[in-house]
Length: 377
Image (tube, rainbow, N blue to C red; front, side, top):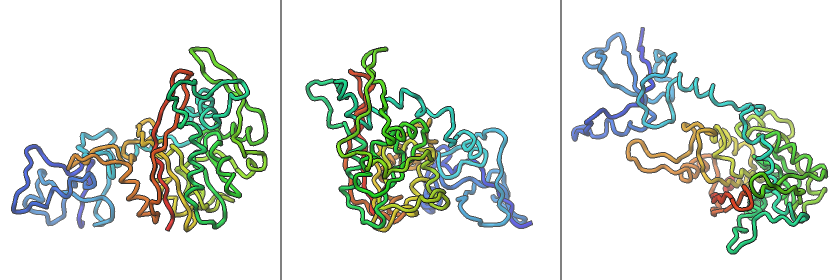
């Protein structure tokens, strides 16, 4: 009865030796975009080519065209042709993807729960640590990249520099790690909400906030390390630290927090520091921005766009792949601009921001992140 079509897992794609015909040069090629999926089936009155098993038709699965359309899931992976991971890869693939991505904060696979990572991030967020023990964050040498120190503080300082309009004088630190950036924000805002996916990181931040003298080990060489005490930045005292509310949370659940979390509210400033390309669903975080940022407020995002499938399924990457038709490279920076503008934000700042993470006294990670500022219009 009526139409009975099925979307397949194949994207509409050019067959071998495909050529554009001059009589109808814009029929197929505009749909080689990874968004149009092949459809099979027909209606009670299908005739000619439409009734053939060799018919090739396509449609975008983004709204209900006919009530007879059906979606099906295969028990096994289908030998489908997909131009790039993206908008529609079939119900079976979507099901498998959902099973593979574990967003639970208690996941044992969370690399950020290890003590080694905790020590590394304490060193990153509190670079003055070791000053009492005469242990430098970077081994002194000519051309030492000391400009890469105080990265969390520099990001928070950028938030202040961009002068968000004051509505409630509240700030949000998304992916706060061990709290160095949150304490810096608290110098300028009356209240700071700060959360991280890692319970280990949040617990350390709370211990520092409580006044506990926390210590950690800085790697020197091989199995040799030095124990140092955490030292806060100048101006970060107990009065500043008590303005911060730390909790364990998920950046992909920001919309849920905006709707249901008691006391969460809205903010004049939101900061996401080296977080975007570590989320399983970056768009879930970005789509929440209009809900949580006050008019005239500012969002500062800092990211190196280091996309890795161990953190983000390739179908969720904002860029870092080639256009399936033109083969032109698609960059995350350009897509991020389109996304933020569509959400009602104007780009007001861009700079390249370096950071240094110590592995041991003679080996460091040097990362160049892109820092952008966005004002809610």
